[in-house]
Image (cartoon, rainbow, N blue to C red; front, side, top):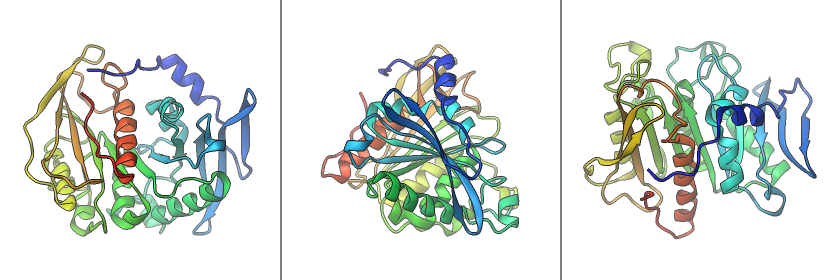
Length: 311
C-alpha cells in the first residue's frame, strides 16, 4: 500500500484540541498569523446547532472545496475530528473540513432515533450550514463532499439521498445502508462513492441486518451495489489486493465497477482479518487518506478529468 505517513495519535489529539466548542458565540483560535480552527453555531429549524471547522492554510486565497464529516452515535464533532484526523487531509488537499454536532443523535431516515421523534431536520441543518459557509468562507458549492462513520455514515447517505444536487461525493466508514432509506432513495444525479468496511465489523455486519424493522441494514455488497446501480455503472470487477495492515492486522482489498460514468465512480475497500472490526482505520491503511484522495479525484473529474484509483 502506498500512503502518506499516518499522523501519530498523540499529534491527532493535539490538533483536535486546538478547536473549542462554542456556546452560542463563535470562538476562534489563531495559529501563527492565520486562523485555522473555529467552532460556531447557527439557527436551523428553531434550534441552535453547533459545528467545528478546520481551515486549510490557503483558504483565504481560494474558493475551497468542503468535506462535512458526521460523527457516530454517542459522539460529537470533536470526537469525529480526533477519530478521523481529517485536519491533516484538509491541509494537504485544501479541503475545508467541517464537523457538525447532532442535537441528540442523527435523523437519518429510519424514523427510529430521538432526533426524528423530536422532528429534527438534519438535512436542512446541513443545507443551512452550507449557506453559512458560503457567506463566511466563499466555499466552492460545486465541490461539497460528505463522509461519516457508523450512524454518521447513515446520516451522510440520507443527505445524499435527499439533496444530491448540493453535493459532489459520499464516503462511508464502518456502516452499510439503512433499508428504509434505500427503499426511498433516488438521487437526482450520479454520485461518486467510496466505502470502507470491515468484513468482521461487529456493529454493522458485513452481511447486513435485514430483519430489524426500521433498524434493518443492507449488506456491504448490497450497499455498494445500490450506489453502482444508481450511477449506471457496469459489472463489478474482481477484488484487487491492496496490502496488509501490520498495525491493525488485516488485509485490504479494493473493488470497483466497470463503465461508471464520469463523476459516478464507486469503490469499496474491504478490510478482512482479525483487526477488521468496527472502527476508522488510521494505521498502514488510512481511511482518511483514501477518502481525501478519492474526493480530490472526484473534484477533478467534475472539471473534465477522470478519476483513477491510486496504484
